[in-house]
Image (cartoon, rainbow, N blue to C red):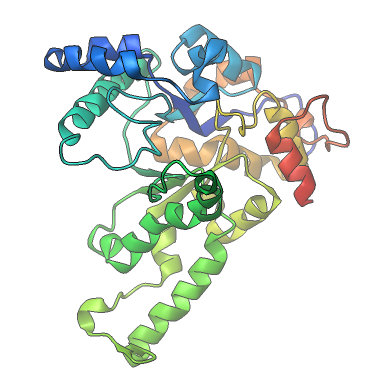
Length: 344
């Protein structure tokens, strides 16, 4: 364990969410679609709790958002969508694919979001965009049935992991060796057993040219193992990690593991990020913690750690604070603390 010190950790959240309000998106929408937008907006009813009432301003209000994050010890963030863009039936990451007659309006809506996001980030700059895949996407639309929510929970992991599987076996990582692929908010404890399985599969294909009765030609064979492709091309943004995710970091590599808060979602670590870190990482070496909390994300996304250091010295948790074991949950603990406590 690191010696307790009064120095502060710099924390970069590899997973946060933001978006504009409908009034904001209207200003970023191509004027040709504004009448259609007004008609759509008059019929729209928002189903999401975090986008209703006073909490929704956390998605776009700089003062509220930065105040919340700094109070939680976080000084920089990687931002994914959160609100509902024009003409979308729901949250953009979970929206079903558009029908042919919906495509034009959906495209206009997502372009409005992208224009808004560019201005939003420009107020507090970040640089470059590796290819990111966020958990929760790609599920079928099961319709408005009671079982749909349960099917989502049961299958969300499978569909979230599919982009990595398809990039691997289709040879994307082989053809584009410099590609940086990030998998965010889908945990990481699933990766070690999957990589072991795929390593064996690829090795057998190279050695025998078959799997059971299935035959493979040279065009199917990949020269590297799944683990080698992962360590060369992939990173994970591990939001509200549990004990199994924390343990998996040694297999996937500390330089590939990025901690995320998932602000402002209810399942995120805020406002108990310090407690969450104490719960999982109190016995972790200081240099390793700095890699987990900021170093890996800074290297991938080009954050300037020297520029962030003065702010971290004001709002970040101290090394001594994080190295104090969490022996008692705070009053009204959030979901992240309760999940981790139940997994110990």
